[in-house]
Amino acid sequence: MRSPYILILLFAFFGLSQASIYWLKYTDMVQIHSNLVFFAREHKGTDLFYALVQRDSQMDHFLNGLLGPRFEDFEVQETYETENKNVYAIVSSFDHIHSVKHLLLISLSPSSTSPTGYIMERVEICVGNCDFTQF
Image (cartoon, rainbow, N blue to C red; front, side, top):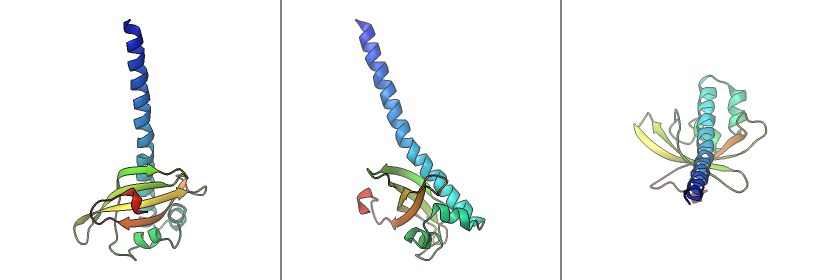
């Protein structure tokens, strides 16, 4: 009688552990992508930078300080993948000029030319709560 319960618990544990790995995948990918973007910007690697960030996009202007404060890094808080494979992420970043931590909502779209398989396009500075429905 006990073996069916053990088997059910084993399958439940295995299934839940796989589900959590799925969500960690996009969080890790966006963090690596962000780290590469800031590395390329710092070292003047324009080819790498524009393989990761769409040229003349809202994100391009934002990262180069044209839309407000210049941020130095992103720390990924949460990610969400849409049906058409776009990835949205809530990230936190520290504005070193004003000593303020901001929450940002960023979007990434699939790209065959990017080292991570995605390209950054849009960004919104969250006022109050960050919500994926803002895009």
